[in-house]
Each structure stands twice: as structure tokens, then as C-alpha cells.
Image 1 (tube, rainbow, N blue to C red):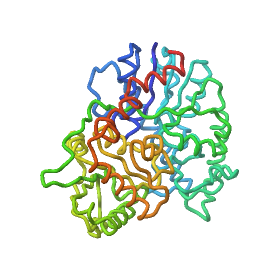
Image 2 (tube, rainbow, N blue to C red; image 1 turned 90 degrees about the horizontal axis):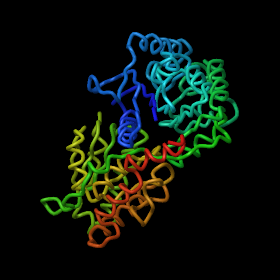
Image 3 (cartoon, helix red, strand yellow; image 1 turned 180 degrees about the horizontal axis):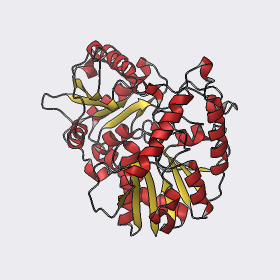
Image 4 (cartoon, one colour; image 1 turned 60 degrees about the vertical axis):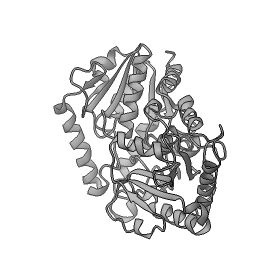
Length: 417
């Protein structure tokens, strides 16, 4: 089977990386799967699984979309938080898309795949899978609405915090026209929507555009074989807690909440805290939050993939204090390396972590709740060895649910491959 996977980027961003993993898994399953990309990045020249469009074709629609958004009232800082889907490179006319038996749309925004091109592809009748790497299909324009609920209040995003002007009214006509186009295109019978977590699915169907739409849930493929548990006691006899993010100061990651929880843990559970140290991984402009921490810590900054895997291998706990996660990649990475995940549990994290089975979930967003979950994880690690919660068990939890071959098979079942 010939399968075209559409992705703006080859290796820039999480959506592109997991699309590459899926492409490789489909090819290993015997299918002619190829990524069609706008930014080839680190793709190897001549790789038959990657097809880059001519940048001369992509740059004009990319700039046109940014210009329209700016003129409609989107500030510079928000220009890449929204997309219209009104401009593209004509992917419906791409030779491999025309040849393909099925098309998989991944993150293909920023002037790459237009809604018109998607509509034309759907008109051929071939199966199209649209994987939602964010909530753009469910909103008028934005990729991540955060705490904004205008996409689900029946107004068609009449008010939008990403637009300047009185109460976000500027750009209202544009938002309503795009929402109407999405509503028509996404109603196609041969379009199969996929969410990467149950939480994301619930958020999507709460919106006006996808209300009542059948959405499957298929998690990201994960290269579990690259992650192996290591020695869980550091050379100085400590248990290591790791918190990682591309940007630790991203408000969604809620670093202050992590520091508050760790300080509460140190205060409430001193016997456990005496044998703990913390590692933070990710970009951080201001380290004043970390200076509040009562536990010994080290900020590693951004690490190479190999170095991060080595850190996870030595970790006893992988910690997330995020307000929400579409899925929770760092929890999966830590688990694959044998670390016990500790997290809040009102978003996509619950598709990875089952409280008391393969990790611990804090039921409410308070320092005390997360600190208690952390104490349970450290106590459990100290009580090992046992099969339950062992590093090997945690690794197997990821391998049996998220390996690329398993995820590829789930996608193929949708299109009958």
C-alpha cells in the first residue's frame, strides 16, 4: 500500500518526530510510506521515505498566511500560535499524493496543507487520517486554546485572546469563515480523525466544529528500544527525580508548582527527602524558581537525546507538574527507562499512568497532593525488588502499548491495510 504522510517539518517539533517514527514503522511493515514535508531539516538526501516540496512553492503561502494574520490583528508574539489553513502548496496535486492509496495528515500548518487541498484530497474518496497533534481542527484558528473556551461556547470563536482590539473582536469575520470551512471539510465520510489521548478527544468534541464527530484515540509511537533502565541509586547513594521539558519556564509545565511540591515533600517527608536529589532538564531563562528549592538539584539545560536517555536510566522518578499534557512524552520516556512517573492526572497523562499500577497520580493540583504522590513513589522504589513497579515492569508497560509497530498496526486497521 502507498501511504503519503503530510508534515510541515521533517524533524522540527514533536509532531514531526513521531510522524517520522510512524513512517519508518509503516515501511518496516512492508508499505511504501513517504513523508511529504516543507522543511526537510536533517533528512538524508536521497532517502526514499522523505519527499520535500520546493521551498519556492512553500515560502509564498507561508508568508501570505502570516501577513494576513498580522493585518487582521494578531500580534507578532502570537503569529505562530494561530493558522488559517487558507494557503498551501497544492498538495492535492503532488504526484505521490495522487498515487497514494491513503493519506495521513499530521501537523501540516503554516502554509503547507490548505483546507482547500484537504477537501480536494477527500473528494477522491481515498481514506484520509488526520492525526490531531494539537486542537487546531476543533478551533477556528488557534493550535492550543489553553484555558480559553470560546471554541466551544457556540460563538464560533467570536472573541479570541490572540487578536488585538477590543475584547478580541478584530478578525472575527476571518475566524467565522475558517470555522465554517472546517465544519464542512471535516464532515467528510472518508476523513478519519485521530486524537493522541482520550483527554484530547474530549477537548475536541467539546468544540462546535467537531461536535458529534467520531474520533479514534491512538497514542504517539515511541522508540522504546532506545530506552533501558540503569542503576537506580546514584554514586552518592541518592534517589534521582527528573523533571524535563523543552522549556521549563513554559507556563503549561508549571515549574513553580513543581518547586512547591518538592519543597512540601522535603518538609513533610524528611526521612525520604534526605536521600533524594533533583535533575531539571530544559531551557530556562530565569532560574530564580529553582533557587527556592530545599532539595539538592542540578539544572542540566538542554541535553542531547543520548544524554537525556542516560539521565532517565538513572532516575527513580520522572516528575510532571504540567497543568495539562496532550499526552505526556516525558512520562513515557522516563517509564521506558524504568523511572516511576508522578504527575497530575486531569489530562492526557492518564493514558500513560494508571494510579497505583504503573505510577502515581496526584488527584488535585496542590503541592501537598503532588508531594504525597511523590512520597509513595520513593517509598515504593525503596521497597523493591518486586515485579510490581520494577524498572523492567515499567519498561514493558511502554513497550506493549506504545511501540511503533503496535501503533502502525492500529493506524493500518483504520484504512484496511
